[in-house]
Image (cartoon, rainbow, N blue to C red):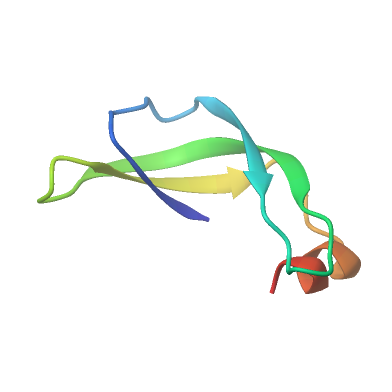
Length: 64
């Protein structure tokens, strides 16, 4: 997953992400690891993150 963040975070950092579900579905809290960090032209940072585990089909369906 890609995240735009206002400050630099080191690759390898673990983040506890709260993903918002569709209106009729619950959200999901999942751990992610920062895989890469890239500066953006707007003074923010693009974080490329990997979830620590695969999402189940039901979890993915609730988010998209």
